[in-house]
Amino acid sequence: MLRWLRAFVLPTAACQEAERPTRYETLFRALDRNGDGVVDIGELQQGLQSLGIPLGQDAEEKIFTTGDVNKDGKLDFEEFMKYLKDHEKKMKLAFKSLDKNNDGKIEPSEIVQSLQMLGLQISEKQAKLILQSIDSDGTMTVDWNEWRDYFLFNPVTDIEEIIRFWKHSTGIDIGDSLTIPDEFTEDEKKSGQWWRQLLAGGVAGAVSRTSTAPLDRLKVMMQVHGSKSMNIFGGFRQMVKEGGIRSLWRGNGTNVIKIAPETAVKFWAYEQYKKLLTEEGQKLGTFERFISGSMAGATAQTFIYPMEVLKTRLAVAKTGQYSGIYGCAKKILKHEGVGAFYKGYVPNLLGIIPYAGIDLAVYELLKSYWLDNFAKDSANPGVVVLLSCGALSSTCGQLASYPLALVRTRMQAQAMGEGAPQLSMVGLFQRIISKEGVSGLYRGITPNFMKVLPAVGISYVVYENMKQTLGVAQK
Image 1: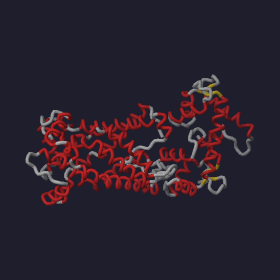
Image 2: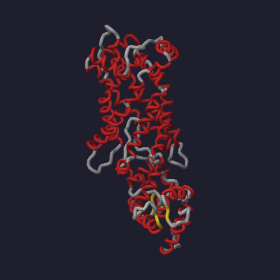
Image 3: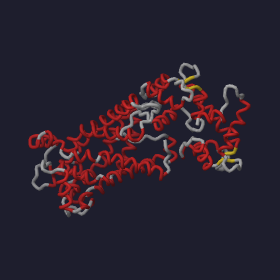
Image 4: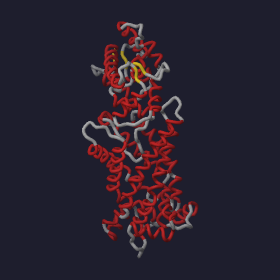
């Protein structure tokens, strides 16, 4: 693709500036598929794809928004020329800001240095992988022509956008975790991309949770009852015998309903905590993102925690014990008071920090290890590697926080047993260890682990399909 652009569009050292319009005209004719002298959005998309330059809906629309001066929904040759020339000027500024020693070439060490100045840490090997995707002559440096070729039709305009482009398109990780909310640019917020992306994530979460709900209910049953005799097969048989096949999804309605408010509160809180932890114009580092994400998670959990209690009660309940979510809430309020909706809140809150921290740390460690030891000619780990890193990091986080999750679930459900003692968090820990041993703190972890891979896989597939359906730009 770069060779095509250099041969037909961009001037070589021997070419004079005056020749450039002819070369741009050649490219314009290649994009003007029906030969009417103008290029619409469909022709731009098809033309770029045929040239091996697919950018995605958002990028192409941004080119049109910027280049279509008379707002007629089409680019004529003059508008096309002006856009490319203006874009080249911005790319020149970005190139110079990365070229720290002003030698006309960008080297891996300069990439590392530039990202460090923005609070992002990558290895020199990862920087080489970034440059490798741009470097067309194999010198492991990028000169102005290579840089211009690569970003000619990519509407990024400054270093921050370029880094975001590298992050999404090359897989270079700068601290993403399953527990850290999505971050959106101002353009994405203005264009409405953010709510589409959150909606896609919400639908993916709902489908994923519903698909793995039987395993989730089995986990809760094993956590609450703590019987060593209850194994996976016996637990499923007992649930089906007591309430039929439908009972395997008991409590899932609440689990799905809470996705929307939890996501909305977490997203809002994350933005607020980021502002509190950074000064005006300061970049958010990994530590600040972890703290912001953990606090946002705690805030969201505080808001939706009563629904967590309802989910547990419904999952453990026998057939007919509650008429539904509303009936369950009404019964708890009548017999136990408002405080019952926050039983187990303390261990739940305490469990967020080790889960989020270990999940984030392990995810970054696994990703960096893969990039440093197995990446060949691309900085993109691919879907399988990313999903594997996510599943393993989530598993490690759950291992660390599982005892707190188990105690939380028991505290949520212990009032269901008539005459049962209402133990505190410490009291429950002591009782479990004395009666069931340390292994009792991990009761139900097997079905919990069994649902990780299918949940992540289903969530990813649904998420990608929803993004396409909603027209979310591919990054």
